[in-house]
Every structure is written in structure tokens, then in C-alpha cells.
Image (cartoon, rainbow, N blue to C red):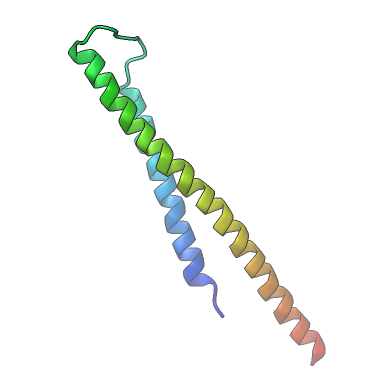
Length: 92
């Protein structure tokens, strides 16, 4: 069984995580670090940016965990596959 399709999907997931990190960096550059307590447009803009960053963070953390777990599973599967192939060669 070839693990190549799984590695390709894993690599695509890695690219998605990197894109989310870049999106978060871009969104945080537009964030105003000062606190606006009055009900002006600046306070409303802060809320919108904070919600956007929160959503990106949620998906980024979730996909990063999935990326790490699937990467470990793929490494174990690859190691098992190599071990299995080398043990078959020794039996012949």
C-alpha cells in the first residue's frame, strides 16, 4: 500500500495551516493596540478585527493539532511499512 496520497493530503493541510498563519499576521497588522472605550467607529472596527482574529486562531489551532497528529500517524505507518518490507526480505 502506497502512503503517497496520504502524504500529499498532509502536505496540503500543512500549506493551509501556513496560509492561516499568514492571514492572522495580516489581520493583526491592522489591529489597533490602543483601547477605544467610546462607541465610535474605531471601537467597532476593533471588535470586527478581534472576531476575525479569534476565528482564524480557532481554525489555526484545530488544523495544527490535526496536522501534528496525522503527521505522527503517517510516520508510524511509514515506519511499520519499512519494517514489514525489511522483515520480508530477511525471510527469503
